[in-house]
Length: 133
Image: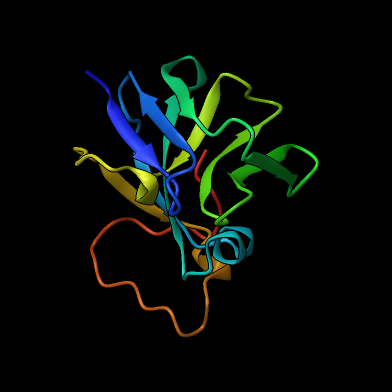
């Protein structure tokens, strides 16, 4: 049985049938702006493990860079995942949209060099100014 998730209005519903990859707190400006928060918690998943159960007509995307598209609900604005054209088999799931509890392996804070000045990190996870290789 997979993990279920949805957007704020419930119009988009999805299921992830495979494992969640390592989760990272991303503090880049694009994640902050697309989420309206200090950071986004993202977990990599295989695109083939993601199934849209409802709301395909509501799922829209925005090219936030030459390589990346951010997919979101056009009704309520909830960010669902991002995807790079250079890595089409991987989605970066916005963990906050999961409806089910998930066992996450949180491994790092990335792009802390561009974190919001008012944001404070209060854990012992490694911090990287950019994305680690």
